[in-house]
Length: 315
Length: 189
Image (cartoon, rainbow over the protein chains, first blue to last red):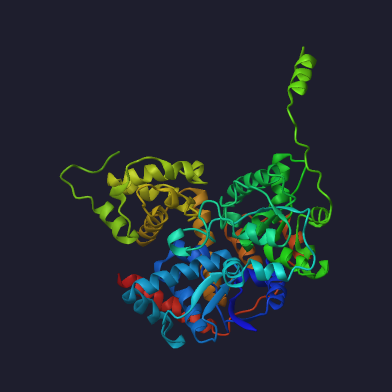
């Protein structure tokens, strides 16, 4: 069994408990043992870097230093925002030793930063370290018939210089994982648009507008549901959806699931284990498409005869 | 109003460049950032305008705008900037200078955004971690918006989305020490 240092992030014990839970199921199936960083702290999220330069680096640095004392040389992070802050800090610390020394002086009792641990999002870990072949080999229940729109948000792939992962404009890693599970990943132009992120509480109007557009485009793309890899994206798109629907007057809703929930389903875990009851927008209807034979639109063959017939009809 | 005379040194531009590590002078005003930005419709001045204002030394106007507070640091702009300017870092530099030089906007939106971030940091200082329910409640109380999201709370609670209790890191003490030392480091600059 391979060991991986795991940083769950604050929301894993709150709004994204189902992400944390299914991630653990999936990792067990994939022979990866997650080791929590003992006594980890909040990465500071958006607020630390918005308000202060020093805490923005000191808070993630403490976790990096603690992670260096564990066995695995890779830290896997569930939340996209935690991942972004941790990776940003790592890149800055590795590139500027004077700065590293200065910031390290605020957490001297934890030890010195050495830069020996690599930082990856769990999506990146699944795609790069585990690989599609292994994922495919663990599938016992194919998700054929299910159409999904993969939504990455901002921070998993941007800024490119920091993340060094996938494309910042049109990433495909999650799409490939979904295809490995047997689902169909639809073309989705809004996959890296921002959902409104930290404005969820302080500036809800912005979230309703930005997330609304993402939901609309996903629905137009023909997806049954949206797959995400970030707790804040999930809560903006799911918890705020009733309000968005009310404002927009839509006649539809679209469920938002974590990629690990669908992986767990394809790996044969029973529905109860997915914790679907945590979703505000129910996902059962969308999941009932699994196994259904999709009607493929018949190709319209425009023979000369058909064209002539159509034209005569118009006349 | 343009406050920069031709003979005057643009200390504002220098301060922003130094803090952000970017070179705002590289901007040639193509406007890709403004058209890419998901929140430019909410800004007093779009990112392209902010860049030009910095080049012109319009410090007061930049500091009193809401633009940098609306920036979500999504990095869509910098990814597409043909001059490869780190625009989110520029926005961050403006925010930090505004805080250091103690400028305060009168806009309610800006006040709310700042209040949110302040409460978030207080949470971390107190517990080492953040708790969404407490965060929401504190924000509503302190912005005198008692009933905001009340329709959401029961649903989220019933679904166990938001735990009622909360856990602290064992070394909450270490975090408080970090805050104290970080504060001293910031003042020394």
